[in-house]
Length: 422
Image (cartoon, rainbow, N blue to C red; front, side, top):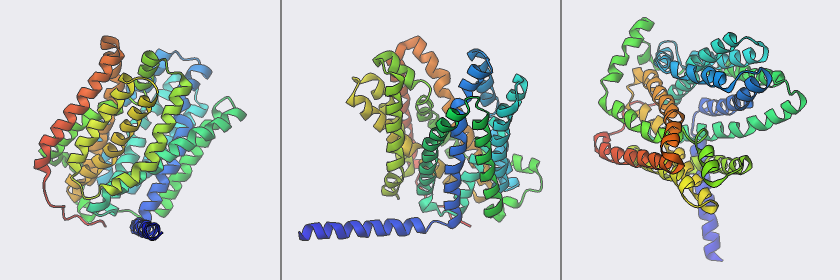
């Protein structure tokens, strides 16, 4: 009985400390976390249904839709450099508001436009200056608001709210589509949700851009600041190695369901169950795991993330169907759980205060480009090597990424930068 009381008291103490630590985050950070949730609700009400709308309602071929949705994403990659400069030159808040407004424009266009060129322009504008600009500005704002030692936790909290929004959005879409199968109400509701979030950011957020980032007198001078980013060999090496686990991460939504269907005969319903399991495990464990690992070497955690992504995705494909599939998906989720917040924290740690926006813009570029490698080369690997061969390529990339991060770790051994949050 005494042991039970002691354990209960210890659990209450741990919960109390965790609660106090969460309350220690600035108020604006929690507003930003809520913004991530609301924005993802609005986006994921619409994003998963864009293809079915364009094909089923407007009658475009899948080849046309693939070009329409895929080509702008590739063409937009260089513009992520401009996104980082915007966040430093004009501020985090304007970058976030502008990014959300471009998402609104896309959904309004989908609601009313019927000409392919109109939709193509909206897709291209959003790809370059929509979600990517919001992500760059918000990542820089988190680095401004949260002290060095707790940034990984902060990024993990926004991942929790983001993943929660990704669950809620499609459920709301199902209700709306049942009432209006034309999709117009769906896109209008998504646009309204995102526009409300833009208004919240505009009205309630204060600008966090540090004074050191306001020195450049023009956008041209701000863009020239990327010279310092390109001279940072540690940061460039970190980004280059990150492309290896990102290759696996980029296949979760695109190649993995096809691999499971071809190799194990997985039905869409079974894939939906696996996907729900993946999302729930991330939402439940994201913050506790990152908090537990506070103070650990971030580059070594990136090595673990790379290995887990490679082993988890390949294991889900190569191991026998059933319990082992869930084990593989769980391991994959733990890799993603580490990969995204830790990589954002490292990028923020390496960035001089005056260049935070540009460093985060560069990281957004790497993250989006690395993510695009998944479907781009994953499909080729499946055609050339089969499902097992493609899964082994993912495993090889994850293992190589882990080895390279282990080799890089000694170069990142340094004291925390003197960049307290503002």
